[in-house]
Every structure is written in C-alpha cells, then in structure tokens.
Image 1 (cartoon, one colour):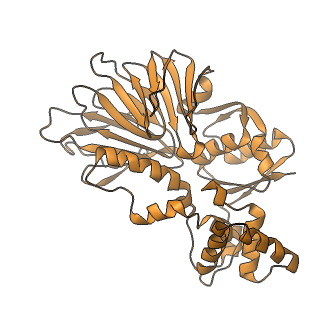
Image 2: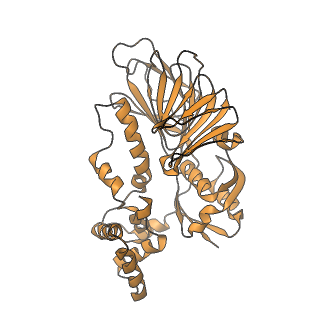
Image 3: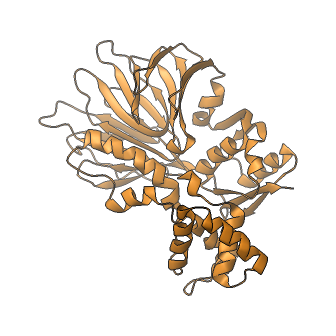
Length: 390
C-alpha cells in the first residue's frame, strides 16, 4: 500500500488540477506521474470522482490496524466477521490518501475547506479513557474523570472501578466463556486488572481482546498496539499474549509489548522475570531482564540489551528518546496528542532526536524542543503538523 501513496508535491498538483489552477509545466509533471502506473491512474480518477466527499483521516490511519485485528476476531469469534466487505476492498486500493491533502486545500461545493484550514484547535495531551465492548456488543465508555458506567454481573462477571481503571472478578461460569474487548483511542491510556490478578496498562491506539475468565490450561489474550504487563505468576497456567501471528509466553513477569502494524516490527522488552518470544515460523528467543526481542515484517528475529526506560517510561508519564529517528518520535507523539504528521521533506524522517518529554506537557513546548533538531521546521495548523527543512 505504501507504494501507492503519492508524494506531497503530486498531491498538491492534483488539488491545483481540481481547482483549475494548475500551470502548463505542472500539468506535464502530473501527467508523467499518472502514466507511471495503472495504480496511479486509478488513484487519480477516483479522486476526481469524489469531489464532494469529506474523507476522515481516521479511516486511513486504522486500515492496517483493522486488518491485523481481523485475525484476532477470527480466532476468538469464528462465527462472526469483524471487518466488513468495504475494508477488504479498501486495503487493496489506496484511494483516499491524496484526499488527506484535499481536506486542507480543496474547496468542495458543500464546505469551505479554506476556513477549516485556518481553524485553530488547541492540542491537548492524552487522558485516561477507553471503550469496553461486551460479548453482546454493548459498548461502555470508560473515563477516569467521571463515574464509569460499569455495572457488576455483566456477562456473568463483576467489573469494578479501581485505580482509575477497572478490575474483573469472576466465579465459575457455565457454557462458553465470553470475550470482552478494550479499545483505547488515540490520545488515551487505560489500566485494567484481569480476573487472575494480572495488571495491564494500555497505551494510545490499542485494542485488547480477552476472556472474562481464563481456562485451566492457559491464559491467552490478544493485543494490537502497546501494553505494559505485570503478570500474576501461575506455574501450571502460562500467560500468552498473541500479537498478530506471533506470541509471547510467560509465567510471572513484567514486560512491555508493542505491535503497531504500520511500524513493520514487533518489540518485547523484559523488565523482570523471563519470557519466551515465538514467531509464526517457530523461531524463538528466551529473554532475560533488560533484553528486547525485535521481529521485523521480513521475519528477522533479533535480541539486544537495552535501557528499559526507553520503552517503559510512557506508563509513568514520560517519553524518553535516545538517538531515535524523528519519524518514530513523531509517530509516538501523534498517538498521544492525537495529531497528524505530514512531511514536506521526507529526509527529515531520518534525523536523530534525543530528549526527555513529559507526556502531559503542552504540545507547543514540545514543538519548541523539536525545533532544536537544527534545520527542521514544524508548522502547526489545527491538529496537523507539517515538517519541512528550514
């Protein structure tokens, strides 16, 4: 899909073409890009056909995440289909990406998008919030600031408010064990305690699926996103975290697991105890405290010794970066502050950044810190951040 995403300059040429403002020299450049491939041509035609549609950036941002989550739903709810037919088609066709830029530059017949471009929206840090989806499809909004609308005895399990999150209590259940799903949005984080006493703290843009009561042989959960686990030790009942087609097996330990499909890698960082990371092709690594397993989309599994603070500080209210690519830094910040990043100069992605940032710091102050990377400029427009060379 990434191969179909146009360059920013091409996106602007298409917008100019739609507005009738394109110059002759620019027409030739646009024509050459269209003729490079059938995908480019199809993408251009589809944009022209969608003149009065306001595409939501959330749809694009979640495509990869929903595709990964489809596998979780298949494993835990075989009788249902999680992703509707439009998504199966949508993953294969990179239609709306150019419209992300049209949202800022193109005037439709219904909305004055130039006004939207000028609109100022203050950027706030994330907060403790999530959505809980019960086995029957009922959705409960969870918010630390308000009294959670959580009831006891839902799906045969008691859900209690505790430490700004929720805690499960469950007696023996008859019949099939229900699954619940916790969804933490961009700009959110949330803690829960599972029925076995395992504590889990979730980072922004994360989905977590789990049974309300674990079976006798194992304790299996499903993760897409990032979470910090403090697993209750049970020698005869291992705790398993499935991330896509790979898994982590533990008995009693603390570790951080990260799996955002768009990042093209999975990371497991061990704080204490011992974990075993197992890939879909049965490659495995047993980690000691202070070690990290990294699995790339190409199937390369490696181990390295790391400063665990770099990978766990987020749960304590901090971001810690050490010679990290600016693209990775901004992706992390984008999830927490719920902003969108656009690169007018893609070379800026590879700049290294080092710094400590409080998660609840004002975003304007963070931008000032990022400006210290040298010849890189950050322009804030609403909730969009444009990155360019000074």
